Length: 463
Image (tube, rainbow, N blue to C red; front, side, top):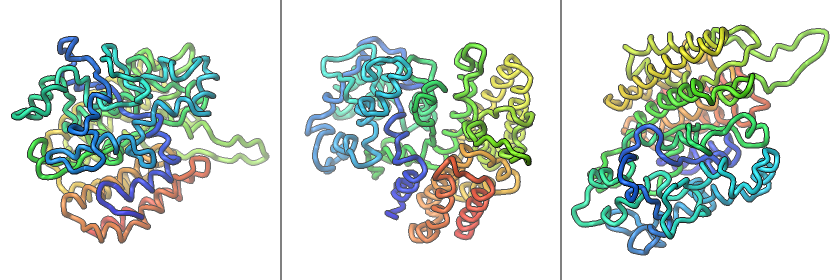
């Protein structure tokens, strides 16, 4: 199944689940959302210089990763067509494929490679473009690292520091909240043009959007976390990255839902709701076929489309362990939000604002918290425990759960609480949980909960 570290094993498992990682090809992180670093810098500093500006053999364009400070083969890894790490580079090219052209034709977008609704996430949207900038480069270096006009000439200079680069406009991706804000712009959506996949796009053939910050970050890593990296930026805390990502995903979803994007005409924007809760087989026979399960986290009437709560479920589990003093408030606000949806849009918007604030407070708390391998064990136990497990009644929340136990197990290895060999020894249990969400049309809640519980027990036995 491949090595464990760096989510080598997760790549194959996630491929089973996400359809050869089309989500990573089609929906990849772009411009910053919340923590925008130097977003208010002078216009020249916000100029996008293009991928070619980073491609010199003395910079990031080598064929081998033998640089003294950074690998220097980052562009080759970014462009690697056979790996998830090359998905950003492929994002523009996929627009010209059969699926991309079909979606654009259905929606009346014309040429998808020139459609603003597509380019916001399939290329690097840039108002100020340097001479070497090409939209066809796809999601380029600056999409995540920030417009390089203010720092490209100085970031490699003798005496330059990460702090000075950030001050000049580089995105501080070592900060979990900053990274989450950048990635969520396309892995969930933003309020800027071309960065929101609505229900009409999905009806036309666009894949479902999915996001998990630590797992996806591992798939996209083009650097080595060696001693020099740790000295400059600190060691990555996978548990913290995962928890902050969950909190900010909830905050982003609710903030957008409360905005004008939350409705379209007389209808709610169905993008925010759980897909499989509606997209199920319809039966007309003498005896009814029950296709839904009661969900204790959603106090809504039977038959009402539920808000997609995949990140809310994970955030509840994380809060119970990392910030137990705030967990009760978050759970109460979450239930109140679901209940408000059953009343009217005004009540739902108000409740969404309150729940978004709770999630934002948890993101801040997680970012400043001291985490440990014991916490990762405890969160896995919570996810599969009696309070959380009954909430896995729908496909999307279950997908998020299995990605969570995978990334949390990885954090245990990185923190030294579990050996690589021991983790590899229970890989089959984790893969069974992935297999339970491989195909949304055949998803069975009870079977998934059983598989998840088995994987969680195997992880707990390593404690």
